[in-house]
Image (tube, rainbow, N blue to C red; front, side):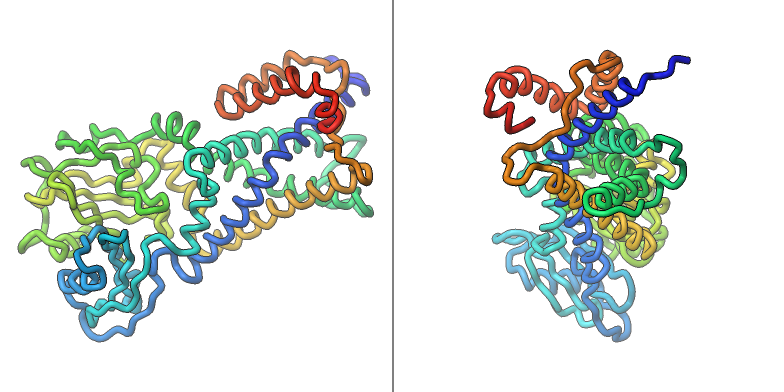
Length: 457
């Protein structure tokens, strides 16, 4: 086995440090935004609820029928159309209706016992939704989604180079997992590296699960390959709409179902509806309870001629704390036949992994996951702040240069580095494009413009 010389190891170290530094320039502001908005969503969902679900009511006998409740909700939005019903989590919670009116969608909370409106506000217009939109797109639509995907992809490289920079050398062992007594920049560096090591596994998980929602690596690669197969619907007619059309602002439809087409109403296909009476919101609610939907669940009301009733319950939408109990049932709006009954066990393996993973990512598994996610977000914030502090303390006073770590003149085994970069670039396309753009910028611009070369050195 060939032993690398100290000069070779030093060259590798400087190269890893340089890549870590430049990736951090791009990643730090994005990760700060993601961590802060993640904390906001985590605690708003626990304290206030994300859709009015925590509006309290006083139990007074039996609830009014849903037909009466939806009529009350419609009175708050004249000329409106009912879109969704969210069943109360318990007997002391309001029923939630989404009503679409001429001035946009409204969320209407109704006391289920008195059938009176207790609250009415713009649908998905609260602080939770602002944080969610910022977390997903930086409030910049598709462009923001791509920026976040690049940051998450580079975050994987940042994690790998950080691990290499931390790796114990010179006889160190487990002590490298603890901060060392130091002052100034040495203390910040120790705290930065130790914090990074302790949250490294969680960071990799959050990056991969977050990337699975991104537009390129997620939607066009992983999600497209892992979509629920329509063949499992048992030969029912399909709509030209996908399950993504049921998303109600934030991502609510399970990941593996988003790109799967919806079944269509208007045929003799499907199983029987085990309920009696006219087919309306009360009939469907009774059926949902009969087949096991307890407490909070969501009911999408058909709006198009070929639309279906959709009964759903999943942990991602905070309906439950158990992703293994995820279930979506589609019912023909005319015949009442069950066109599809999809459960966690029916998902492809990647879909099952995401159903469990996204619940952990969002902290919807109970208070233990809220506390764990809070600690993780605070750790990410500290990594970003400490990285910026270390750079500030390292730079020459009054200098406008970035003072990047120097690249070794003779990089040993550069072919291996190229192979690693190519693998990452293929696995994560936007990261590959970013690598290429940086190399082109360095070769064609920075190296030829002395002022820029000095500033970025």
